Image (cartoon, rainbow, N blue to C red; front, side, top):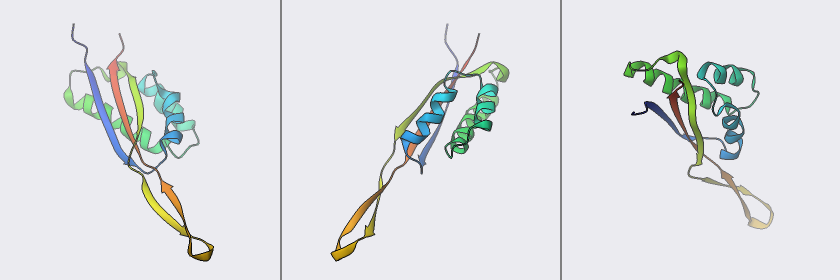
Length: 114
């Protein structure tokens, strides 16, 4: 029996993966409507990109047409490290301190709960 899954990816999100993972861990394994409710009450900046990528996966499932949208759940969600944008801050005596601006890649895989 072939399992049906749908996948969505958001790349180059301008947030540190460590901060996005805390929110992703809260919704892993939950039904989509339950995950959206959790994201609605979470007070983190990472909520918005996660909300967008989850709903993008739901829209892909609707477009595919062979999924029952009410029975979708977050089968996998993981946050990978993206490229680091390197900036500098000028300091005394002509030195420059490096400032690393981290990016994240978020992948969401939705499955059908039986």
